[in-house]
Image 1: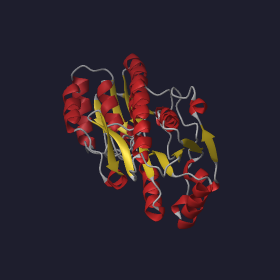
Image 2: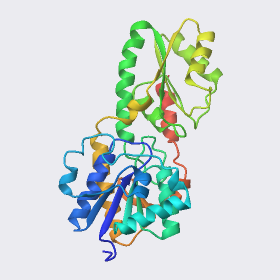
Image 3: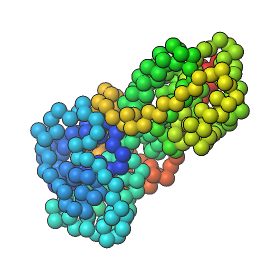
Image 4: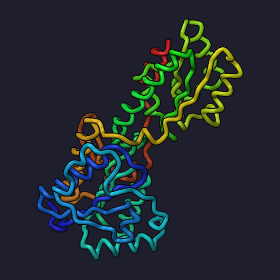
Length: 328
């Protein structure tokens, strides 16, 4: 164990995701287990600049494992993107005698941590928290599993009304740059078509597929659309196109939006958060820095932050094939 680290700071940054609180709890309790102090940093990097710190012990994280969001709050910080802002943050950490950082968030959070580490050689460890699952070096990010379950539950409800009224629903889910939520939730909810940024289906093929579904006797259809899909400028443009070419369909759009980010984390996300928190703290105590902790083949592994940021999280092509077969 590193003798230099006696106080670790923990923060959440960027978009919130279910499981962040469970990760905070894990970091705090792992610090207590190893008899070192833990400091909660409120409002991400902005709170670091302003010295918005609070000492945390095992009892301060009671009853949060089941809560969505983040008790440490989250904020984006334009000031931290400047050398002056990072200098202020470093001074505040030194003033509080914090020796290392655990940052929970996505690629923006990790980019900030990596730059900070390069400038000040300050020990940092990242935990991936984003529902999009778009971070390289981990099969699952915190919140992804919960978001999938939320989306499937909502689509099941939408299907009830689609069937009752012979409607076609376009359901837009989060995933600006990656279609993981759309692909997995679409298969899980039995969607007729799934539109993702990685696979350009094209308007003609979409229409052909819907016409085939209609001809096979389907009176209602669900099309799951990732918000980053490249077919139309928006999901509403897709609706207009289909209405124009298939007037027999009553077309509706449902944009799920931020409801996907909320809610109590699934058991999978709670367990994952607990494992990642332990590994993050213990890796820092072993003298490691500038890594992200992730899960690969059910083992907790370290990936250099630079690789986690720049590497591409690839879509599972086997799942794409499964999706095509299921929509027959």
